[in-house]
Length: 330
Figure 1 (cartoon, rainbow, N blue to C red):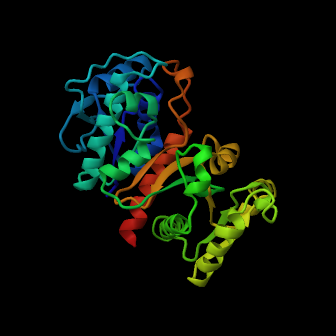
Figure 2 (tube, rainbow, N blue to C red):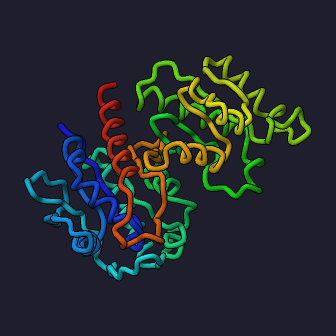
């Protein structure tokens, strides 16, 4: 049985509906999953017309495996599909948030096996009343998950983040032994369970330039990170570091590890996107449900122009289907 994947619309003023629908007509997608769309049906119909995609949408409360039919869980009641490409609005945020809520519900009650989220705007979501730093934090709460680690996945790299959408000025005070162990445990467990890596080797990046230069540029390495890594090794984790991020990626030392634990968002995402921008996948490790998304945003500058690249979305679909399979076979 192919896994059933729920696809959210994302922000309809961005490239979300475009990359979702273009991915669903791609030959590889139907071979690996049964899709169900979640969002206002009017949005999907409008996108299909604009991008000249032949899809026969049908409202449904459950998944449908009917030849030639694209099932849609329509959350459009009370949500106007007033599409204004390139501009985050309260209505586009309301639509994106409602789609997330419904997709999580479908995952939690077993109607679908996983969810793949199209890019949304934090600004639009917040304007609509969804006061979360990002989709990951919102999905964590909705799925009643106790722990989550944002991971970015590509063929060459798997990167977990200790802090996610935090201002740089706040990062250092958020790095603690307890938080480091929480993220390390989630990433290690996910590598074993979701990616079938038996004895994962995980590199821990330093927080400060040159790993603090023996305390001259910061003390977190000597006071927190080095003791944490030694304790982690004592507990059986194959952890190494703390590595200065620039040299670590510059010398391709990441090839000696199965995953990397970065201290903050850009420290991990910049090298991954430099290496595999069109192939990266955002995966929420540690959740009670399976959720992936492309590794890019709403791309308002090209929204509605038929220019969006679907490579990352295709990888997100493949990753979600593979993780569902790995968990079932465990």
